[in-house]
Image 1 (cartoon, one colour):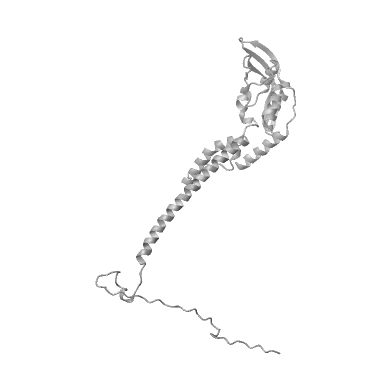
Image 2: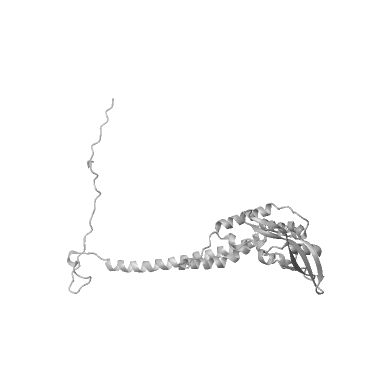
Amino acid sequence: MESRANDEKAADVNCCRFTRSLVGEFAVERKFQKLYTDAKFVEVQIQCMRVCYVTPITSKVVSDVEVEHTVSDKVWVWSKFLRKEISLAGRKRIYVVMFNKETSFAKCDCKHFECHGIMCRHIIKVLDMEDVENVPAGYIVDRWRKDIQRKHTLVKVAYHDPEKTEEVKRYDRIMNAVEPAALRGSLSKQKLDLVIEGIMNIVLRLDESDALSAVGDNEAGALTSGGNRMAIVGPTTPGSVNKPPNSVGDDTTTLTPPVMVKDPVPRGENKNPARKQVRKN
């Protein structure tokens, strides 16, 4: 998934830098040259190049807004050996294209657009015959456009693991909630600043919550340790070793004298080292 996302990013950058030249003068080709990615524009150009093999046969008016065009075309098949489509010599097929004058939308029997999302050569021929300069919006598929940001290109790895922990599930919920804001914030500098400001405010609130939790834990720990210290405070004397403090019948109080500890004398040194006499010459 990460490799595919990186490849698509590189392809989008190349589409912005380089533009493939036209092979004809069709309005459809000029339109998709600006909108579609390079890979899909190549498929459009293949259909434009094969328009020369399309021959109009008849044209019949069905109603006030619909016209039925009958065209003839070569039969194209996929060659496994050559790994491309080739035409069968001497074989042709008849196709019927219904054209609507109000919407400038056409439907063909080959169903190439419904199957692949690319206009077929028969529709391109009919639009050229009807002098249609503006491509209908119904033929523009957002999936092939190069000016639309795709969500999966911002995700490095996306796996489905049914045995996720609660922490991972919470993390996924946060990412799903933040993703729409991140997509909209990347469109302009002003929106980016708004998103960053909101995230920083959330981080500050989280820091305050962590600080309050830490203070509460410290106070609880101080009370517990203070109670333990009060239970063991008090001098220990030989007469009160096995007696509890302030026991009945114990009227005498024995104080332990302070113990004076002298500094130890370092080993290997004399207490009063003799002063060395320096002879004068």
